[in-house]
Image (cartoon, rainbow, N blue to C red; front, top):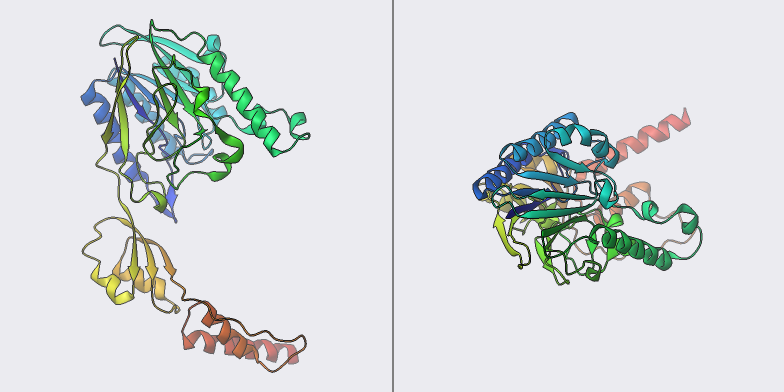
Amino acid sequence: MKLLHTGDWHIGKVLRGVSRIDEQRSVLDEIVAVAEREAVDVVVVAGDVFETAAPTPEAQALAWSTLLRLRAIGAEVLAVAGNHDPAESFDAVSPVFAGAGVTLLGRPRRPDAGGVVSLRARSSGEPVRVALLPFVSQRGMVRAADLFGGDAAQHAQRYTERLGLLLGSLTAGFDGAAVNVLVFHGTVLGGRFGGGEREAQSIFDYVVPATLFPPTVTYAALGHLHRLQELPAPCPLWYAGSPFAVDFGEEADTKHVVVIEAAPGRPAVVRPIPLVTPRALRTVRGTLASLAALAGEVGDALLRVVVTEPGRAGLADEVRAVLPNAVDVRIEHAARPETRSVERGATTRTPQQLFHDFLGTQGIDDPRLEQLFGELLDATLAGEGS
């Protein structure tokens, strides 16, 4: 049988105020096309379908229609909630999607109550078991009463122990008679970050060891970390990564989905498939003149621009005039000079001089700002004297 592993769609992600919904639509179109071309039996979406727990109607329409399109090509479709997703909403709409043959799981369930789904591959009739474990927060795993006692290390240990119990329960029925798939959204020790993850729910208390995943698992489909990667574990353990660069920390990554071929009692054959539609993110650096010369080279990439000349009012607008796709413009500060200490009560430096020195520490050289500051200061002093 064939399985397609994807996740971390982050539908609705906005980059510095720029909507990316059209890019996300194109990427998801490509994922559907890959699933159809490969004639996969099962598609698993390993969490973070949405960017926020309150997705817009447009984001919801894209997500739900994509799941239904994947089902329409004949694949069984199963998706779990990630730490960005509205878990309660997943569970609320799950009965509707179940009627269409799509399994949604927002919060963990017992194996006999939806935590494990049994099915047969349409291509070969092979039995397949899929254990589903959505993201679980520490406060969702460790009781509130426990959090008031003990230290952070003890809380993290309890989280790991209880997550291990969940994984053990969900995989207890796995044996060599079926293809056994585990879908999990979380951080496994040793995983490399992509750059767009929510760190507060990815590090320290939320890192679990790969030893929790038993050898009876034919393939573990992970979500949460945005880089394609395999981790050493008792079973094949893979992050498919995000299908588009969520932030500039991922600009060098090639994005993928993962296709797995497996049969009962045999090792899984894992085949990452690169995606061609994600829009590039790129960081460029230089003076305004050198940046203008890059205009024909950057294509439609979204740009983080580092300007290597003194700042001035309106510089960001000038950059965007020559590089319209610049979504993040920043000044590269030279080494700041040591500031002179001033004794308490000293009055030897005027406000204008202090403002001039401040602009210098920020790498800004614009006499217009100093003139405007002087005018505002004069107006303020005149108002106080009236």
